[in-house]
Amino acid sequence: MFFILSKLAYYFLSPLLWIITSAFIAWRTNNLKRKKVFIWLTIGSLYFFTQSIILSELYRLWETPPTAVSEVKEYEIGIVLSGMAQYNHYTKTLQINRSADRIWQALNLYHAKKIKKILISGDSGSITDDGLHEAQQMSKVLIQWGIPASDILTEIKSRNTAENANETKILLKKLNIFPTNNKKALLITSGLHMKRSKAVFDKAQIPVDCFTTDSGLTEERKYNLVDFLLPNLELFHPWTNLLKEWIGYAAYSFMGYI
Image (cartoon, rainbow, N blue to C red):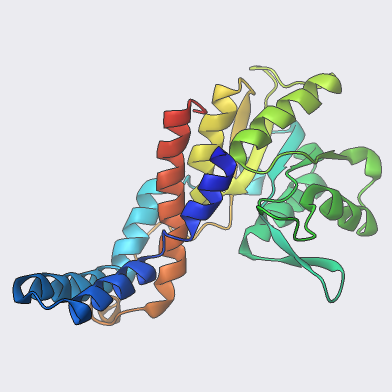
C-alpha cells in the first residue's frame, strides 16, 4: 500500500499543478477577498518556482557533493540504484534518462579498477507492468558492451529505495560477499537521491560510502543578472524531483525506513 500511495503522490507534487489550481480558484470564486488572496498566491508562486537561484541554492543544500573518480578508494562492489531508464516498446530496448549517469559513472569506476563488480538494484518503479525490468535489462546491455557477466550482479525484486536496500542485503548475504565497516560497498546514485538512499542503507546496516552522479553542483556560485530577473519555466520538473526527495525522506522517516 505504501508503494502505491507513494507513486500516486508524485503526480501531485508539481508546482505547476499548484499554480494552475490557484489560478483556477481565483478565476472561479465570487468572494473578492478570496479572489485577491489567490491571485497574489498565483503570482507569488509563479515567481518563486521559476527563479533558478532559489532552486539552485536549495539543491546545493540538499545534494550530496560529487567526488572525482581519482579520489575514490577501491571497493569490491559498486551498488547502482535503478531509476535510470524507461522501456521503449517500439524498439524493445531501454531508453535512458539523465539518471543514467549512474551506470555511466559505474562503468568509469569499473574501468578505473575502483570497483570490481557492478551490482544493479531494482526492477521497475511503475505501479503497472510497463515492460521495464531495469536491472535485468541493463545487465544484458553491459554484457553486450564487453563487461564480463561474472562482474555483474543483479537484484531484480525491488521497486523503491527502501526495497533496494532490503533486497540488496538479502542478495549480498546469499552470495557471501556482504560488506563490512572495514570493507564497505560503494553506493552509486544521483546527488539529489543520495541523502535518502544513504540513510536507508544505513538503516538496513549495509556499510556503504557514497558516489554521487548527475550532479548540478559547482564549486562557485556563478549567477548572472538574468538569473535574478527572468523566470525559467523549465524549472517545474526539477522542482518536482526536489519535492519528491523531501517528501520521500519525511515519509521514509515516518515509516521507519531511515
